[in-house]
Image (cartoon, rainbow, N blue to C red; front, side):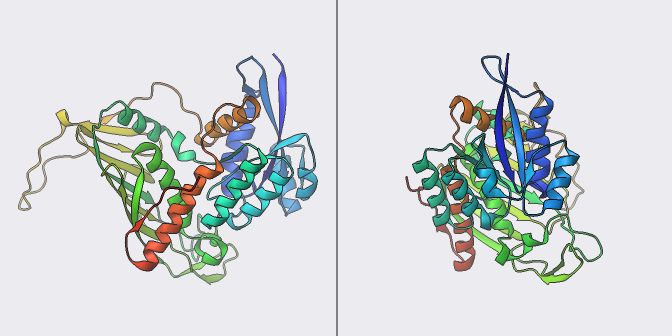
Length: 383
């Protein structure tokens, strides 16, 4: 057994998602496991270098986690041939430019979603990576959540039969920031800074729908700015210009209907911060981030509508929890490991920048639908 080093340039990891999910729970977690086991018995050891504009923040983060390499000079980092992967979890508006620079330097690229806030820019980025022959990918972490893995298993096993409809209910109350600090950064609520729940979440829902429920045919969406004023990280009031909630109906080519509610203005009374309720001819399932429950047709109750009497049935009783037969990896770490294997072993990896273009398209068409107040067809992505 030998240790094989792989250098990773990590940009944008001082932010919440980049730091927690990608740096700490993915790359550093792999390092703590003494690297990732390869088929020949070698262990692949990620060696990150942290890159950012704020030297104080980057240095503190590196020292806090025992990382010896950090810099504010991206060009210098990209010039180092010993680092073969560039990862970006920074702002959406800067992403395409940064990735193109990395591609020009011959780096394989991996990034957070959305890969751009414009479909034309996203497609150009994907084509640039393909023409350069570099390996590329975008985060589609929801596919490796334990709840969705169990749901997919139930669907693939035929436990639900033909899918009739899906209800995706996502969100929680994000505080305005005046008397309690907000849980999300203020740029999320400014359209001019790339904010908005449609751009942020419709990319997720597209790949979840594609991989679990069927091909998208059309979408109608209504966004809203329910909370028009908020307070930023410095306690300064600002006008919210980006949607903080969105309500969509999606038609699939197989005839199923998907309803999506995404909101940062809702108080949770459901199993999880996001739930996927799937109804099929043979049964139904409800999945959250970690758990999935099913109700086969054999155990489906037979309620009778009677508004004059208090409901005697407890509709939570007739659902079966799908057991965990094996431990689950962190969803972000699971995809990182697949991408690393793709880079060093040339194993298949289908979650490419071109695949991520579908999410940008979906968000763009949802915004178009809102603007034009109508259903919008979702065309096939260009080759």
